[in-house]
Image (cartoon, rainbow, N blue to C red; front, side):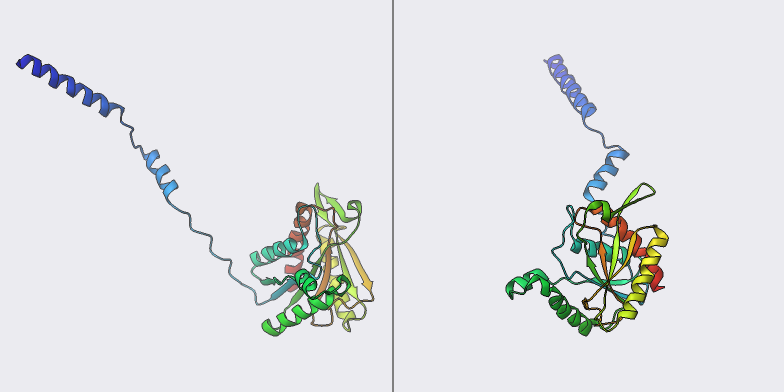
Length: 238
């Protein structure tokens, strides 16, 4: 009887030993992996404004599209680039297209709508050191694209309104920015186009209208140009 009990005890001890042997072990690597899964990384801190210069961006023609991208996206990306450089930069968020639809305003009256919102922004926030109306041109890709150092860019064009009342100031600023752009990427800017319209350029100082590429340009091409222009703007504002 005693022998039988002893055998049972030994058998149970062997089973327990085997169970312990095959239990999963928690190595230092396991602990690190667990911590990585259970810990949420802190969100990056907001980029501080280190310059006293202010920039405002808007899109009179908010419906202008690229390939899988649009001018509002472009303005937001330009804001992102300028913010990283330490500037205060904002983008008009009101929906111009919806406003025109609701109030039955024709497309050729788009500048009436953007003028209203721009004036409101200036009343609320005061003057800016640079105001950019971000557009897109309508032309074939072979005319809207530049390849430089194996990198593809959307070409830019500055449009200056002759009837703004501030033609000389706007033309001088546009020429300066155009030259700086070509100094960084030769041929990036197609220069200045003067038209009869005012393009809201008489509302405040330091305002320009820039057309970034055309309808066939890609997001990458537009963003490549925006990155260059953020550096151009940085040089201008210094």
